Image (tube, rainbow, N blue to C red):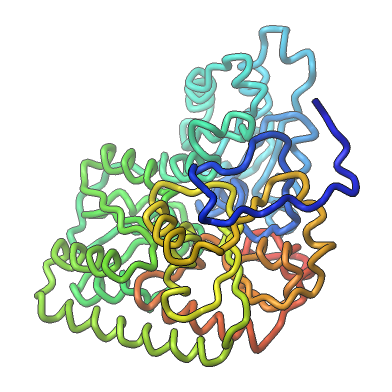
Length: 445
């Protein structure tokens, strides 16, 4: 039953001590806060150099993806085929896709080496055969790699759109002769910090890193096929890592982005072992970074003092883990904005529940949250993430998404510096969070 939400009170937060389920908030109609810094499928697809995206969907769905490409100054890399109502029942859905894509490519003087074809919910509802479509297109355009991509938010329960797009992102990669000195770092939208613990250890072992952000041509992108090992640290990259590892016949290891010192040490030591680093050398590097992180956290705490801290799930993959780390280091963590608790974050959640029972957990998609910003205008919070900043109304916020490319003890040191900077240099909320895709080019800047 629908109900009017005008003048409805803001969704009540829950004390973390009262939460007994990973999904504490009811599902239903969802609200999407106007914090646009997270990447979407358009941003991610643009990471493949020289690739062209073609969206086949209804006009209403096209609006968002077209505006994303326009804001990125990348309209020349996108085309679309608009579906009609009769396409749903005339039995010509596959032909419509093939003919539409072929027509677009026929108009191009220079054919792209790779085309990402995005089907929509309409195709899934009808049971459209994507394999038939790609096979026919490959026969018509033998010099082009066609990739199956999806824009199906109504079916996101099986796999998130982000994770699904990460799988598609590496589909064209083919096995090449193995380069034992090349390590593939996959699944990151933004470039990983070159000072991160991952880079430091890999370089100390005399090896090179392949990361998609550094590829400037399609051939450079395909060089991932020669990697001797794959690693990833974002949870949305796991499915891509498993599939690519099987396809290339090489090992893949997941070293999760986290804030638990013991878990970080375990990950870094395992990587060091697999890289063949001497234990004494790797331990020296790890310990130096750990000590630097501890120093930076102390400096950040001295800077921000007792100001309340709010964290949201778009900023880091484990918001409860970051909340626990900051609380244990003296920060006044008051709010976490997250609609559910992920499995990797459950351990930190349980510790927070026991040691900091008054911490408040807010939903982000409940329709009532539409009024949160109005009721919290200019609230004096130090926020990590755009949604936390929007809901609290605070101008003091760390503007990152998905970890911001920071990893390990070096990542802790860097986020500590960003916390201090956020406190000392307030931002314009409206302008900052209105830009799509943190780190992407924007015509609005």
